Image 1 (cartoon, one colour):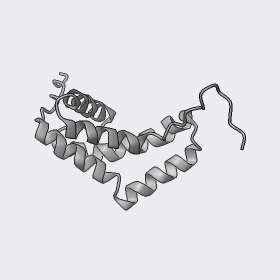
Image 2 (cartoon, one colour; image 1 turned 180 degrees about the vertical axis):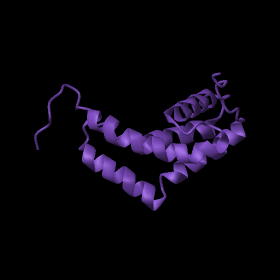
Image 3 (cartoon, one colour; image 1 turned 90 degrees about the horizontal axis):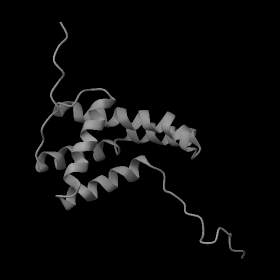
Image 4 (cartoon, one colour; image 1 turned 45 degrees about the horizontal axis):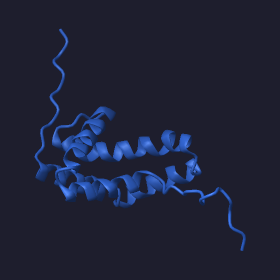
Length: 122
């Protein structure tokens, strides 16, 4: 017999703030910061390599935190947590701000080409 699928944890806005704060703090832990830096350096700002190298490391770091709150310890748990955060972003400015901070930790800064596509000469 197959077991019933695990229920998605239900968190309040306040609980989501706490978990999101802990996730952000987890990226500051020296060991995790070193793992992320190594993955970023190895990816050489290539988006394909970022997905192969940085995404798995960032997912593991998030999983380490959110599993204590009932999310499964696989990539699916991180996706469910991300959906929960997204749902609360519109309701809570603090969650929205923390979500932006988390995204900035995960994604490289995007450089936009100058308008007109020309590089100004100096």
